[in-house]
Image 1: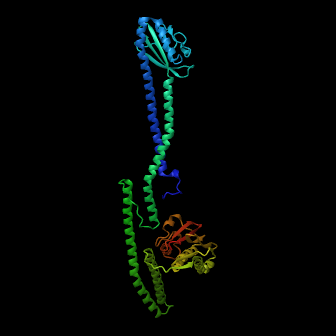
Image 2: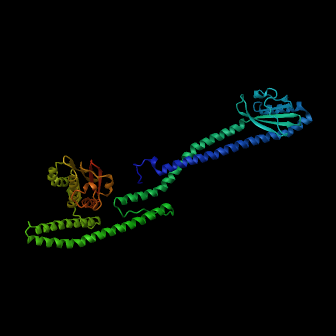
Image 3: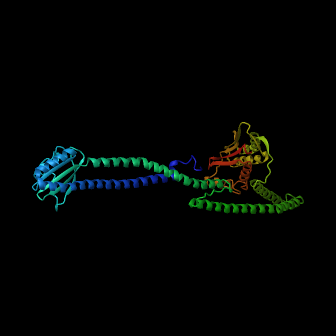
Length: 468
């Protein structure tokens, strides 16, 4: 759409919002998974602790009925069954001396008498998690009183729980790597779809800026904020279009109504001038009146011609002609003026540049551009007129090394009566470029300008062949 290739994707609103969404989503996702991680770890530890507590009753009854040696044999059998590197049991007296134990080769830290004993308080089991250097995985150790005079110690490797947690960590990491980019891409896609309707408003605004006041934003069937924006934008443009149309109509009506009286004043002054000595003061005044009336009539006629051309009422007398020859002929008319100012006037053409249009009106448009170029170029400067053609269009480019146009004045340079500060000292009424633009647009072409203050300007007329 309108945002086009000139806008870097990383600067687009959709990209930045998608990045923020990805960051927020990743942080939220990580927070949820972190909470889930600790809840799962606590749940696994709790289940392991409960399974160890459940063994106390059975072993207590066995100790009371069969004695320590039988209990030790049973504990050795269970340790051998589960694996002595995953499970150990110890029986200690109240002084911490070992009175019964399973194989402790996997837990050298516990082999010394009385080591790693946390005496339970209030006859309740005590739990702690210890790291063993030999096995690597942590060991969950329960120490509990057994029949009042024996301390029962049971250690279980947390390797199984660690494997579950390790799997959870990999799933968590994979989820971050996979889900976050896909969610960001999905957010970018949805935002692009939403902002595409905003781009339509931007496109319409740009089209209107270029003079197409009939441009409107298509309102979608969604009853949302963007639809409200498009509706409000269309209402504003319709209101502005009516105001501009009314203003032009009033200006044209005034110009039309003034043309008759001014013509009569000029005629009266001319008759009086014929009957008066031209060298007298009265003759000088009458001559000035005739000249001023001519200037006013030219101004009025130009205004009306612009209005007729813009409204499509002007009849174009079309024929096929050579645009290169036309530009060369027009440049020849300004050659004496350019020579008097010491300006180099160059004319170049790239092919014949055949075009079908109204040669008389296009001659006026090209003449206006060359006239301005010569007028605003100082002695020693250069004015170049170049014509070229392609399969789709014919172009006329007028380049000068004159005073240039300030950037703030460029957008309004084709408006009626608009004159930049640099042109105030030059004769003119500010309608020439407006007329040139109207003529070019009547041929469905475009006229554009690039300029730098103090460096010069380049005006380009582009006329499409297919729609000529």
